Amino acid sequence: MSSAANGNDSKKFKGDIRSPGIPSRVIHVRKLPNDINEAEVISLGLPFGKVTNLLMLKGKNQAFLEMNSEEAAQTMVTYYSSVTPVIRNHPIFMQYSNHKELKTDNSPNQVRAQAALQAVNAVHAGSMTLGAIDPSGMAGPSSVLRVIVENLFYPVTLDVLHQIFSKFGTVLKVITFTKNNQFQALLQFADGLTAQHAKLALDGQNIYNGCCTLRISFSKLSSLNVKYNNDKSRDYTRPDLPTGDSQPAIEHHALAAAFAAPGIISATPYGGAHAFPPAFAIQQAAGLTIPGVPGALASLAIPGAAAAAAAASRLGFPSLPGTHCVMLVSNLNPERVTPNCLFILFGVYGDVLRVKIMFNKKENALIQMSDGTQAQLAMSHLNGQKLYGRPLRITLSKHTTVQMPREGHEDQGLTKDYSSSPLHRFKKPGSKNYSNIFPPSSTLHLSNIPPLVVEDDLKMLFASNGALVKNFKFFQKDRKMALIQMGSVEEAIESLIQFHNHDLGENHHLRVSFSKSII
Image 1 (cartoon, helix red, strand yellow):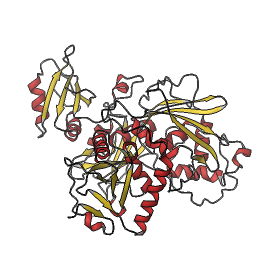
Image 2 (tube, rainbow, N blue to C red):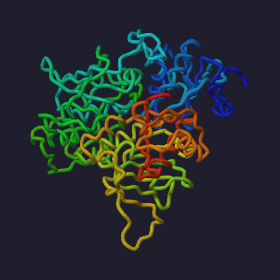
Image 3 (spheres, rainbow, N blue to C red):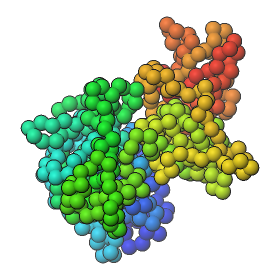
Image 4 (tube, rainbow, N blue to C red):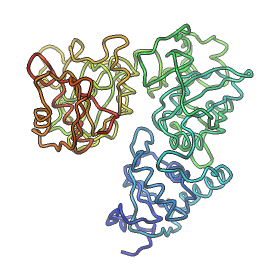
């Protein structure tokens, strides 16, 4: 195969075997969302240097990105190997290509890609002076953004901001306030690169057509301290926080739903990186009223605002508390997955009420959590993680509850109700489990170990399913707890499912969760 990749025939890329150890200016990007656009792919490379060429293979959900130097490509691949980028809840994967450069032709796809490349480079030529991101995490942009909303013609709520910015990755915390008669917000992402993607795509864009313009800058703060979860501030990692003096008002949620509809985020010249779905036709719903929205406001410049409120719920935008607590999980391994294993795994991030594996399509399941925050938490931590050899695909479902089968209808035990399960981790208000929620990792935290159980007993137990046990350590002060390191994250996930609540004797059932520690 030639070392130069030619864009006139995507079949030539079929044999492009990734070589993770051999650096190249050309990076092979895989597992892209179906509806991704050129600007979004380019934005993956921008923080590390100039993107000099792009080849999109949309039918294969792949792309090739050429950086201006091998050093920039190395920095990019190294960084993304430790921080998986996420676009619209899709984890993206990348490795070096065998090709040393890209050659593109004049096909419509390539003309569009080149136009997007020129537009992005023109727009961001003056803003990319931050330098390459240090993979160690010591340099690079802040993960906290300061957002000012100018020309505030319609109300903007915390939920609307969360919906917009979470298209780029996990939003951890949001604080809203008014300063100098301007509505402002501080918003913290999981990492600085995600924050930079959001800033590049959204700075200067309008939330609603012709108004509510976002002005975004990096905050000097490295982290936000949120004390209350209400309509002014929210810590999505701490659902146990009190509401404080400011109780979330239904009016705010209704208002968010009323305007979180077509017209949000006007398109950029090159199609709108990470943009919302394009505006679609809505029939005017005459006489439909929106709770909490004055009639005069509802009749302002957004056409069909009342009908948009109904459309917003169909699109899955945040609305009243208690909704959107059902997730659709797909790409399951039907030979291995059971309702109970999904209950145990998703129960790490919230209290699972019901699980339904689809009778006619057992690769799919519906999982109902006790509230929407827990659903978001589970989705952000588990989407893309491998379970029994397959990466999980998780989205919020349009359903608000999981229905039990009607009496007399047999579903082979594929639907289970866990609402009264004693294994719920978060039933107690203020439970310490709230502060011990971590992403899946190869190290597991074990607790409730009886005195007579020794290290070899636990290592043999966790190796009994064929997994590799790499390390083990009892806590010095409390031998009821220990850390055990498995061979991989996937093995740790399967071990947690198999051994959480395992009977160790002496009336002790093992408690297993993911740990942030490394042995």
